[in-house]
Amino acid sequence: MDTIVAPTLDPIILTVAPNGARKTRADHPMLPISPAELADEAQACQREGAAMIHLHIRDETDAHSLDVSKYRQAIAAIRDAVGDTLVIQATTEAVGVYSAEQQMEMVLELKPEAASLAIKELVPEGSEAAAQKFFTEMLTLDIMPQFILYSAEELIRCQQLIADGVIPFKNPFLLFVLGRYTAGQQSHPRDLLPFISILNSDTAWAVCAFGPLEHAAASCALAMGGHVRVGFENNMNLRDGTMAGRNADLIRQARDVAEAVGRPLATASDIRRRFSRATAREHARN
Image 1 (spheres, rainbow, N blue to C red):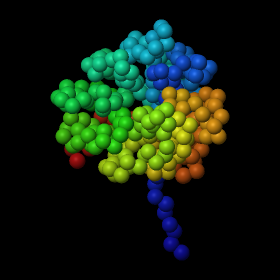
Image 2 (image 1 turned 90 degrees about the vertical axis):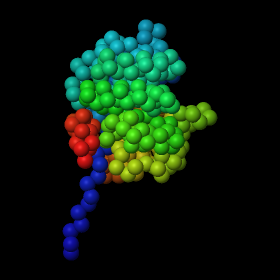
Image 3 (image 1 turned 120 degrees about the vertical axis):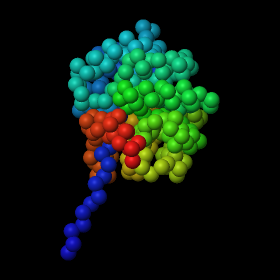
Image 4 (image 1 turned 30 degrees about the vertical axis):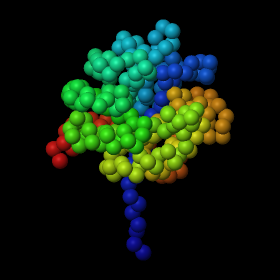
């Protein structure tokens, strides 16, 4: 009898989004805000299988901030706790406060290892030239981008921006956000289908989902070959409806699904190899 060799499955990138821009400890007493709290949560999530942390920082009133000095404090605390075992991704989210120019300036001053970038905020119609210059500078600085998309229409535009060279990264990592603009910010796994139906087959993608069906949506994404971002930014409930004790509990749930579908977990080193500038340039030559 011939031996059947199973195909190699893409390692899953588990990202934790521990706090977001708007939630407070009134929402959950374990919401991490200070650098020390973020470092502690990062360590707990890394132990459960996370390879990346999506980082938000707050000002003195616990409001959303893009302050570079505060970012550096939080990043230093996380690095002290976990070393290089997590990719630290800085958010550029505007939250109705920051302009596209301010978002770009923060990234170029901070020079984080990775940054999340909302196409609708950073590349409004007519701003393609400025965006291309910014993305090219990111590529030169070897800052790993993740492009945030809220609808299938945004995905179509993002793929066109890549084809036109406005986005010079030839191996982009996309994040599909489910439920952000639905009633009550409630997502459903079927919300993923419009994205998948038009996605270029060789593009790396992940999902984050608002509301109590976060785990169901994440499970669908993992089974379909995607990656996931989970955490208190989007949802605080376990799959059985009870409140999670901390972000690491949500990462553990996602890890259990990865094991169930037979996909290994990516490490921070795997992410760096996959989305490094050298890899992007190699794709560009091909």
